[in-house]
Image (cartoon, rainbow, N blue to C red; front, side, top):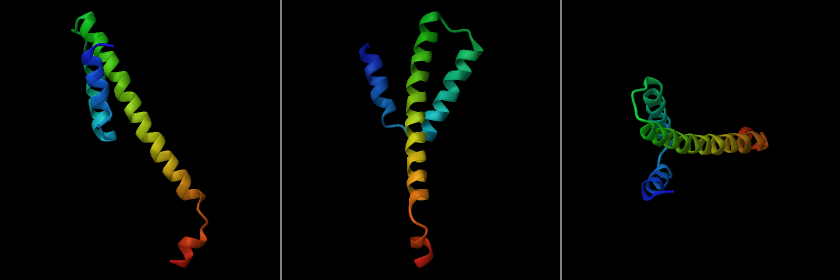
Length: 80
């Protein structure tokens, strides 16, 4: 991976879900619109893959939190 790729990967680690999703939507829009060189298309594709991983990470974390909340005994909700 190049220095640019490393910097891009590091940058995705600080993105929130909404930011990553919005950027991913833009990447997909640009790829679907065409008009980019092969090199640009590959860079967009790679960025899209990184953004998708970020989104997946956030969604998996949210799922784990929901599962944990649902697994708690209901007694605590009734006592409060």
